[in-house]
Image (cartoon, rainbow, N blue to C red):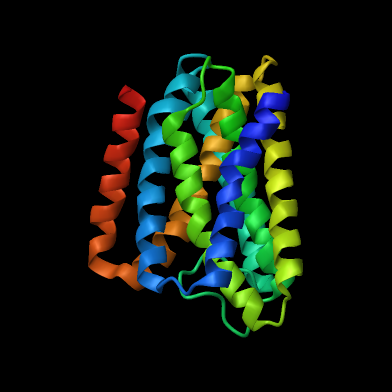
Length: 237
């Protein structure tokens, strides 16, 4: 369990890294969009080949489908609530606008990080850490840390407060990873795996892809496919 906690912290640490990059430099919106598209492709590959594939080997198809839809529904409910509260642009490469609310941005980062960390913890009991999943999470967190930090600085947040906030999110992600590890030890592990996969896939298609496409446009699909290919290659190692 301690290993899972540390793994979750390591995967989420790129949020803090992205924040540091945003504080000391000014990454372009296009660079953030490209990294986000690559991360989306890697995560789609991980969900397809590892999470759903492994769940199908343990439980019937109808249970996998039901768990996927339930995970998606729970994430969408949370995401829509955060959108109305002003957290809809938390991942946008150009940062959030004046209508965005700082608290909603922070809660949105937690909402995005929980399913990622849970599935990472679930993968740990399979015998080894999932390289594609770890890579996808790291790539998805990096531009989010950069974009959200830039917006928070414009809102008047101090450097110390921003670092403390992201550190807290990283700890929450580590806890979620440990929880995922514990869930797989129960009979409902495969159900939890499919549930988290549904939430993760919804996060990718609901926030990462639209936000990336809004900046990168026509090349977004190519970067997503490159990320997907990277996921396949890492899984074959």
